[in-house]
Amino acid sequence: MRKNLSDLCLITGNSNPNLAGKIAQHVGVPLTNAAVTTFPDGETFVKINENVRGRDLFVIQSTCPPTNHNLMELLIMIDAARRASADRITAVIPFYGYARQDRKDQPRVPITAKLVANLLTAAGANRILTMDLHAQQIQGFFDIPVDHLYAAPVLYRYFMAKKLHKLVVVSPDVGGVKMAYAYSNMLGAGLGIVAKRRKSATEVDAFNLIGEVRDCDTLIVDDLTETAGTLTAAADFLKKAGARSIYAGVSHTVLGKVGIDRLRNSSFKEIVTTDSVPHQDFSGIPVHVLSIASLLGDAILCIHGNSSVTSLFEINGKKFGH
Image (cartoon, rainbow, N blue to C red; front, side):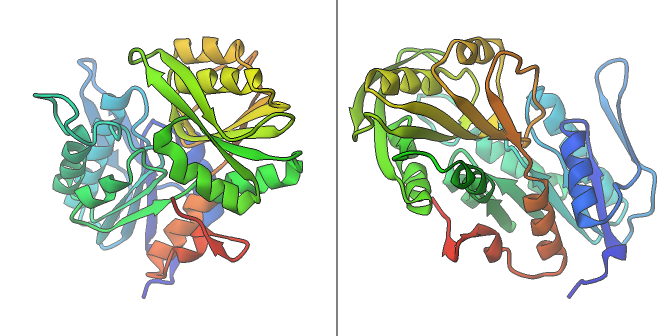
């Protein structure tokens, strides 16, 4: 069993260096010196500038936009670590990109989430640590161990401290009911569901509400938002239904210009998210960012010590899972 931090290494690419720095501070181990740069033609170059032979190495990298570039950085860092004879390589992926492409929902399309799993394994990863996968079954795409964390404990503490009035947790679509139900149980709140009809990849019509939200504070929970179409449509529907206030709790906020513009004109009182991905200018949007550095840092220490990560799922003695 590993207990000595002297053989623990943390390296990071360029996807989210601020989060990596916070994780290193929490773990108590400095980031290993590594050069992760780009050649003039766009190719990625990696050089680990310290000896990692026989060490327990964690590569911290979200596959957020620019997705393909960050994914290649991750794969090349893993390959560099393997060729440098690291004893064990854990890919720490706070946000796992391509997770929405987890099945064939149309003819002649790929299952890219599985392809990425294959690439990570082929590159030399021995283990995966990630958080709030868009599709739970992606864990089964790997033939190596996967530790799948939830942002729920971090979000739970924040919303419990707000002491909201007659709180109702709302799923913005039918697919998120399990997640919303888990949050409602933990927060001792009611449960609501907004049924939606998707018009296109960026446009959503909300058309039905299950549950009562009149004169209630409401919390829409989701794992991921990019264009914010689902979130804003659900929020508008809740406002029309008489909700007293509307909050959002989103694990991964991967917003483009369309999503930012929508949120600036939305009905939300506050949008709470995590630093699993770096964030752009949120001026004009009531966004509050919570750090998951301690959550991931504790998981890294558990994995390094070959101990269970089960305690990281517990909230008030109950195990969170959706």
